[in-house]
Length: 139
Image (cartoon, rainbow, N blue to C red):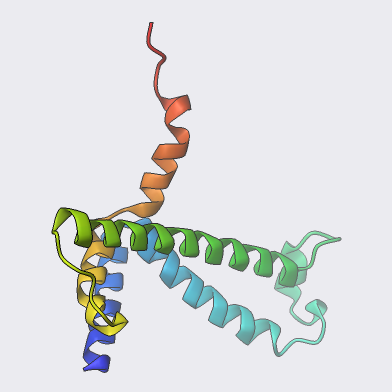
């Protein structure tokens, strides 16, 4: 049963990412970036062993550091987005649908993955924080 729920969750993430939603796309980017980062940089002793990486990196900043910073930034964005989806999910289940939350994480995966596919948390956060510069003041 756990395998089926995890498979359904991954299918929802891939479907949402292909539909153009930012958070599922970032989740996939973090996974691929993490695997590539550790595959490339764990085998290299010095960055100069890979000429392409030393050519595109700045003289004082190594490609390894740039990759780490981008990976950490992406992980932070995914964490903020998932935290916001969890808050919205809890609110939706308890307040809007007047239900109690599922007791286990496994039993909540199907409905959570549907919420993840429907909601756009990073876009909502962006619109909330940029609303003062996007709206005109009342006259």
